[in-house]
Length: 431
Image (cartoon, rainbow, N blue to C red; front, side, top):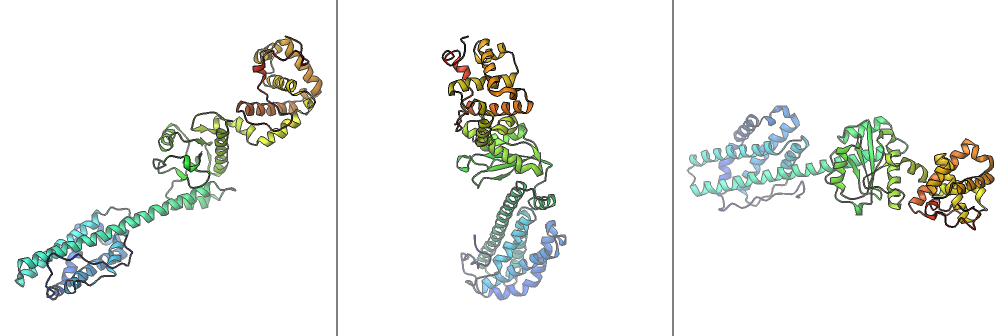
């Protein structure tokens, strides 16, 4: 892209123009300038005075300077025009900033060219100029008009690119503002959203994405979806709820790439929902959550709650199961699994036995053993709740085959596999 102050050099016409033509042209310029400006305003409504004084000045300056520069070019063929490029690029930029196409401006150039050529033919006839001179003049004039039109197009495209980049920058800023902790004041968000041309919704739905190197192109995302894919933890922000239409849009944009969709929340809870979505995505990666993409946080709230901090689960388990610390590993696992099913179902010995694939008498024996170790704790509501939550977390961990590090937090999902084997010789009565 040429710089804004770069000089332009007009293409040489097929035949050199007599320099004396400049002397014939100059007296015509003041009236020709007024005629062209009036014709443009009449033929192209967009360029009436309602465009504003600043643009009207730019239009008049563009016409006057273009005529003068062309005449100078005829008088001194290799003379370079330094400021002309900026004038016409500025006209193109204005069109882009006003959100219009280049059609009106291109029409203005064509109108100017036609009127200038009509005046040239009048001057040629009056001065009895040869036809080959007039043909060369026409070639030079219309090549010049094309050059000016191209300069305006360059300014237009550059303004569009600048505007698009500025809009992207504002939307990235808006996105960072929305997920900031603590929440940013509402009036600040509204101001940035207005600059970013983003209609502020009452609710949003964040979505966490896999790292950028595993993402497909995001060019198919709707314009109203904010996205940050440059960081180590890419994410999106969807205005409103995540409905079937939004799901289809994500499928098109992301393909099979992993995505975890957070809860739909008010604006001031955006950071919370994004954090939960990222935690869910981590659990998908680790195997704690097994579901096809996109994973919805609302379907895995309990798992998120219980497994968000695995080290804390280990600490809880160590404390809650401390009464079984002295029991051998195999026997402790069977007791813990029986305790989990009892706390979950509050069922009879027969019902628990069906789930564990053991004899009801074995369940009764285990429950007596648990009563001996835990005593009155199993009848205290708060302690029962803590035990149930802890054992549920251990069970979820085991289903995902996540590693355990605690000394007494062994696997809680083996009872169904063991059946009746191993009960003899482990202090349990045969079924």
